[in-house]
Structure formats: C-alpha cells, structure tokens
Image 1 (cartoon, rainbow, N blue to C red):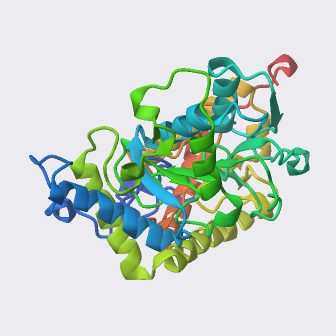
Image 2: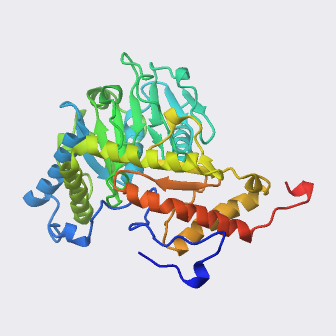
Image 3: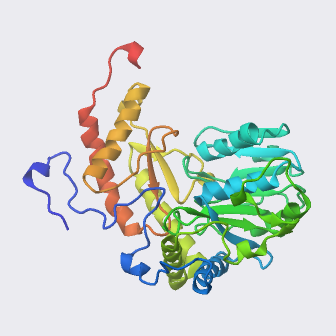
Length: 405
C-alpha cells in the first residue's frame, strides 16, 4: 500500500493511495499471467537447434497443448509461423485467395489493412469491402458465403467483436478466414464455422511476440492442395509441396528459426491456463473483468464505452470514450491531446501503462481485460481513472470562441 503525501491530497480530488499490483493494461503485448517471473523460462532450450529432437519436442508440445485447451476438432491443424498474427494472416491471404471472389469486413484498422492488402498487393478485382466506423459492425447480412470471407473476430483497436457465429453459413462454399488474435482463449469459438484462424501468443496468453499461429480446417487444406495462386509465394508463405500440405509445419517443423525463449514463454502460459481450468476458466476471467468495467462505467458520468451495443462489445480490448460535456466542447485536436495526457498521467503514476486508444481510433482509452489481468487490479484502477480525469481537466480550458468548437 502506498500512502499519499500531503501534497497529493486535495479536498475535492484526493489521489488514490493504492496502485494496481500490475499496472500493465496494454492491448499488446499484454500482461503476463499472474505470478510470472523470469524463473518461468528456466527450462528454455537455448544453444540448440530447433530441429533437434528436444527442440521439435518443445514446439510440438506448444501445438498439442494449444489444440487441447482450444478444443480444436481432430481434423484441424495448428502450426507456428513467422511474424506474429500479421504473418499468419498474410500467409493465409497469399496462399488461399484468388480462387473465388472475396468479401472483407472492416470496422477497425486491422480489418481495413487486410482489405488494403487484398486490393493493392494481391490486386484481386472481385473484391467487396463492407465497412463500419469505430464502435460499430457492418451489416453481416451482406456477406455472400459463396465467396471467401476475411474478418476479425474481435477488433483490438475498436473494442467491437462479432456476436457469436450464428451469422456464418454452415453450407458455405467459400472459406472463412478469421483474425482472432484478441479473441482466442477468451471466447469459445465455433470451429465448425471457421476455416482459417490466426492469433499470436502475446494477447490473451500474455506471451512474447515474434511468432504467430495458423489454424487450418479441412476445407482450407483442400483449397491449398487443389489451388495454386497466380502470384509468386515467398518461402515463408509456402504451405504445400507438390500440391500436398507440408504436414511437418503442423508438427513442430517450423518454416523459419523460432525463438525458443518465446516458445518457452508460450508453454508457461499454456501450462498456467491448464492449471486454472483451461478455456472455461480463461473465458470466465475475461467475462468477470468486463463486468467490473461495465459496473464502473455505469456509475461514472464522464466515461462510456465506444461500443454502444453490449452484444458486440469486446471482453478483452475494452475501448472507452470521454462523454463529459466539458470534453465535448473542446475542439478535436484538444480532445486528442486531453486523452493522450490522461494516459500519460496514469503512466507517470504507474497506475496504468499504455492505455491510450490506438493511433487510428477515436480519442479515448483502451484497457486490456484478458485472462492474465486480475479483476482486483481493475477495481483498484478505477479510482485512478477518476482522479486522472479531474486532474487533467484542471489543466485544460474550454474554448469560448464559436469557431473553435
């Protein structure tokens, strides 16, 4: 417990006396699991080839434990690939697209990025992009499931997630390619509706960056083995040889050299997940964290969710906006400066680190509430948010000229 000094105490705005035990609320890389220390890496295989028997065993262990916790069907493959979730998505786009028309759902920066890659890098002509502003979803009914579909399950930068998988056709002819990096291990995903899923360890598991995970369902494997895209494929994207899936990639024989430090850390996260009760426990922790934030928001007049509809509100990357009437009177640049300052003050106090909204998103705050975050730390954070808002508000003045509004 930290005791406030005399200078910290203000009759109308006292500084909270207790800080979160772990102030790391960043949305990526995310907080380590509770109790983590570098001792968790004691068994790391360094100075050995990842292609040695022990190296391949470590990689295979990550694969098998991931499949078990996620509850993957037996005919789904899971492999470790280069370049985090971005690398996994790009691998899917470059190897699978072109056989059919493509629909892309975009409601935040990453979905927009995938649409841009399909349009400007792969240069596919038969492309439809359905967009929505931050905080909303496009009309999911517009999707044509005879075409391939690309979408994010949970938009990390907008706090918007899809409302389950019932909207995805079971009799689809196209593939569903899902960027689920902020959803995997926080949601019970309907695997039968998803042909390709990508994620990285640095989100809900709190792992280190660098590597991504690519999950392929049987329909995606069939596409890979029956279709060859018309463009050249870099070596790190190649999933087939002689029109056959390279099965070793999904058994621990990675395409490029992996960091065994990152692999060991991923194993630690998976072991922790198993120890606390697996996917059910992980999703319960995220639901409890979101519920705590919802309770605070409902009782706090200056803040609200960027996402108005609870059914599409993320339980991991929780995006908030300032709704105080004083704030609304500020011109746009000043609003952005205010929220940046708000996040900076919280970081200076070591009450919350890295919670400013994403650079392309509307000005606000973004709090990671995934399974590695303790609900008790969120509860301690809330008074700090109130204190910081009052403190920063005192630093700003409301413009009075009409042309500044």
